[in-house]
Amino acid sequence: MSARFPEFRLGSVLATSFTATLTERRGEPVERIPTPQRLVDWLAVVGLDVESCTPAQLDLARELREAIHAAATATAVHEPLPAPAIRIINDRSLQGRASAVLTPEGTHRWYLGSPPRVEDALGVIAADAIGIVSGERDGRMALCASPTCQAAFFDTSRSRTRRWCEMNTCGNRQKKARFLANQRKQPAPAG
Ligand SMILES: [Zn+2]
Image (cartoon, helix red, strand yellow):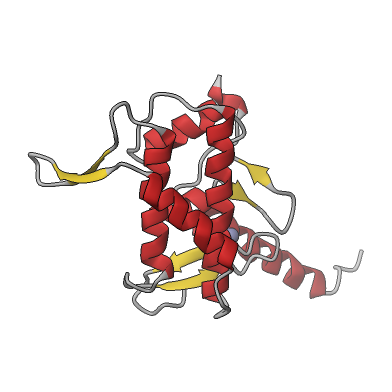
């Protein structure tokens, strides 16, 4: 069933993995959570299992996603944060009921409300976004160097010189494009 949907792009940062459910924003956008069930699937992959999702909850999720994208982009280019984005991120954070819990194995888990709702999961994502946008976490917000992507990502590399949101996709495509451009510059073989 789910094979007909675009696959997820997961990074190590929750908030920007979430904004990466819409890719190629500056090209031909690819929506990776096109249905409520697909959002449920995505949340399960990142450890935020919810029971169900309505179309209205999917709208709420996408609104948060674009607010995080706007705030993260403004941070990356050192512009003031857009007020509507701040409001949406705070609303979602305030309305979630999740709690951090420690498992017997000593790992961190999110315990969502009972029953776990999409709003609880979005609260966790909003709090994660606040962590990276506020500069409280160690890293640098940057924009992907791919012109059709320009996704905001959180660079935690030691040198803070990461250029692409993801090496396997945008990074490789850019390298291939540069390679082909260089080849075209070579004179065509005589024949
Ligand atoms: Zn990218």
